[in-house]
Length: 275
Length: 165
Image (cartoon, rainbow over all chains, first blue to last red):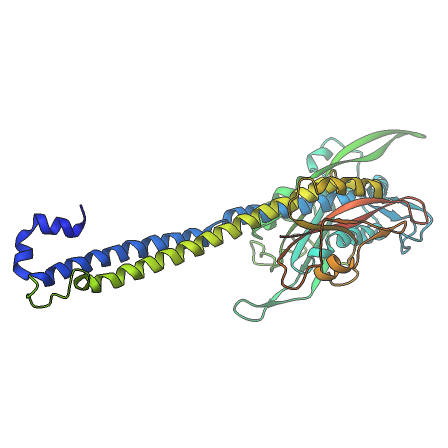
């Protein structure tokens, strides 16, 4: 039973009191109710179509980001580099795996030489080239410091948890309400053992959890080795498990350290611009 | 009844109420059509995005490619499962110039060449135009290049996947 019919039967005096004009009023009221319902329904359909797939899109983008980061990390670690610095991979007569060179270099003094750092920077920069315009990235090789606990034969200054840290970002300065300017640079960072960043948990807390949407693939586990001299020409091999990570996020100013200083300062990441 | 004041007729009497009814019908069908089109285009977009990821996964495998033959062999299998147009090509890293999708698809611009063969595959029937809505994604992978002077080098390449309806 429609509203109009209901009024006719249930409220007969209404009909008698107003005559035919009231019938017209009832009809137009019904029509306005219909319009109201349709307007509500339309608003609902609009909201459905407007928000449709936002989460799916976000998930697809995040899937793509994680896929890119994982592929980039694997590609960097698979890559070859010329044995002679400065030579081109196409024309050089001898190449070596980048990872093998890193391991070899680490074995001698638990650090990477300047030349190798530059090659690693170039390799990471090459693979991240398509995203450089819009993203900042962070590449690091990390050995959990607990692994050095019973290794008294290693000099204290060689027990660095962070073997290599590369940061690509800019020292942004705010030029407007939502405008920033800054020259993008690559930084080598050497977090000090006595500083505020001692483990990767500190990195999570101070940087990764604060930069917003971040693309982080699973870490790649790599075995690093050091030789311990037991006697004349007698060595034992000690293995250390290192984690290699590559993370990137939409370019933005780095978060500040808890004390208000820059995160790239000496007390924290201790970064200096790469040559 | 007919002599009563204000009576126009069975339809004429309800004429004012027809206006909101017609207005409501117009709103409803317009919204319905728009919503349907948006959902349909959204579905197509998701389906294309998934196809794109599928293509890249099939081609890269473990992100390491031994030979150009492996690339072409994997490329051959794509057309069996993908129902939209696509073009896939490997591009040298770092990018030597700004990447242009039109030139990449239509003119093979920037595609890596090894032993006289371009590392690309496609099921396109005609060139794309500026109006063609394309979806592009890039993925790095390691390629074992035996054409270098040292005879063996693993170099980073960029797998570019372009998809359109």
